[in-house]
Length: 126
Image (cartoon, rainbow, N blue to C red; front, side, top):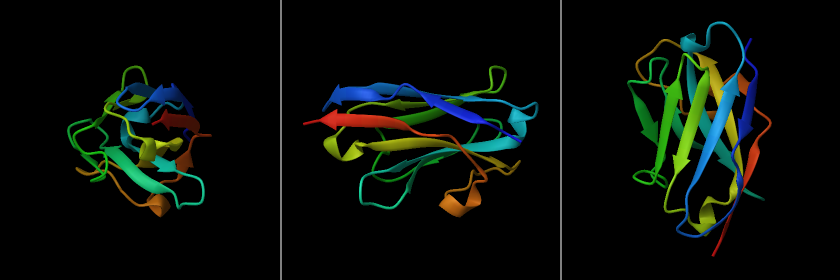
């Protein structure tokens, strides 16, 4: 079992930066691939970024590639999403996710993750 708590959301102007954090509970955090998803009003939840269990492999949605960076600290049981050059279309509730996986690549589908945080709101003003 993994419990996830996000923090770091807020209101920022376009072009600005935010860093989201996700604190995980559970003894075997390093056995989990981690991801970030987001959901804007009236839209489906979408994949943003994922990182595999040892942090060596990550990938991103095309819409955030080059602007967002996912990272993890297994010793601290933390996952981060550094968001730079934010745009109005990045406005959404951001969710931290976890899936037990020791594969080289993290999953990218909503249905592939078993554990979800409560979400944190990110609002980018234009």
